[in-house]
Image (tube, rainbow, N blue to C red):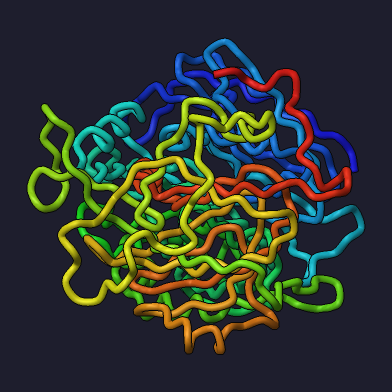
Length: 557
Ligand code: C2O
């Protein structure tokens, strides 16, 4: 591999969309930020320079960081944030991974505007396990807020209630409303257009960087073939509609029509949401625009797309579509891309994940449920408090005292039997607890949506690892029956899996990457409410199985 150097200047920039200019945090003045493009085996060196007042850190979502644990990025977990007028060099080598990932800020809610694609191409001369596409295009979904991020965070964290919703979903930064009162007929100038030629195959790299929204995606009159999820190849399958949770990435092949009847087709996203409270229930669109060769363009007039031309999308709470869609994911599992799912498990965990409530702080009024309570979110009844120093540093130097504890429960603190009426006392405990496991432990985690407050799909992301999704279902997990139905042959391998709304999911991984690894819901509001925990994987015996010392420029708290 070669070394790819990048400089990320975090600075303020004026950006205009939906007829308003706002000053936002950007990387290199871009929204979304610049893509990282590298090949499997390359070394990536990114110097992040903080020119703003906020503390900053960047996470390379889905990169395993084997041997480069100090480059993972979550603030107060693997590093202290980069302070104003300071810089830090993220230095990592991409080993055994290729596909679509993304990078994003990993402190407070700054990823609202600080994010961008990470494209890892296969090694030189290494083909894709599907027909070579004519061209590759990336679409990163996000949100546009008229308010600045700070105000959005403040509202969400101080109200104790649900977060305000964004003003538009975006495609590569372009807002989704086609025509609205502000843009009027000029609306399409502020709309994302994906230009394609007739009769070709495109590889679309789709990334959900939205803060709090699962998104359905579809293209009118076109079918897609899914070939990769979270930078792992899939057994290909066709679909008209896909679902992508925050933190997930999906690659699809799109065959364009040889002789299209229109020059433009609409692509659209809309939310999937089963919880209670506010959410952005809008359909956002972008345009798939055919560039016609001259001999075709004479017979094709430009037809202006209108909302009548939107693709059909499922209704907002269509969990049966979601269940059916999830069922289709299988690993490729061939000689070249084998499945290595642990067949035996050394340690089983059962995690309840979901929302709860906690008392409103004194001198405050809170907008949570049950009158003046505050939302909290937990794993095994623990709402994780972040320390004020980096856990990985404390771990490396053996100084965890007062930083974190090591008794994260294997099972919920309060025995799990949530059917029927939710309990009044949701037993939320605030703590900084970790699970400590020896190197190479084979781990199974069953994650159960508690459905307390409301049943909701939670996209759980594990840092430093991919895991296999061996089982999932709706209702309560049954330890006597469900494991017999696990797929231990070709389960999908990913870094972010949604705990089904009102259901459970079982994952397995081998703990072959020493370090401190964050695991959390990828809904920003749930992470703030505490739906997060950390794994500590101890060193192995061999030199390459040990956590290396921190780099000299590691930021200080
Ligand atoms: Cu993409 Cu810890 O997050």
